[in-house]
Length: 147
Image (cartoon, rainbow, N blue to C red):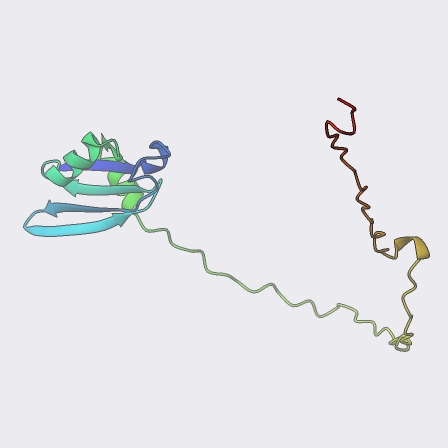
């Protein structure tokens, strides 16, 4: 049996690569069982198998995952479930002093009308009037030129 650590590195592919930032479906056979799991981007998974499966070889050749063979101790160290420590309540102190602060009167609500300075009022731009100048064209005839 071999112990393997695989890591999804699709986040390191080129920005135009079709498989950039994809979740991979990894299938392998462990003993007589065929197992599969999803491997998120940048995720690391440990598994135990006799040989490296063909599916994982294909993903490795496409530079979508890295595969490292790990020792048995490291494999079981990573598989060990983390047990949360039980939370013990803090002891109650019998000699604590509690002081009561009188509440202040509620604040009065005053409505204020917003004032707008005259400079901030938007003025409409003046309408520009375009005057076309009449241009006269003088056409001189041979009679006018005395030719």
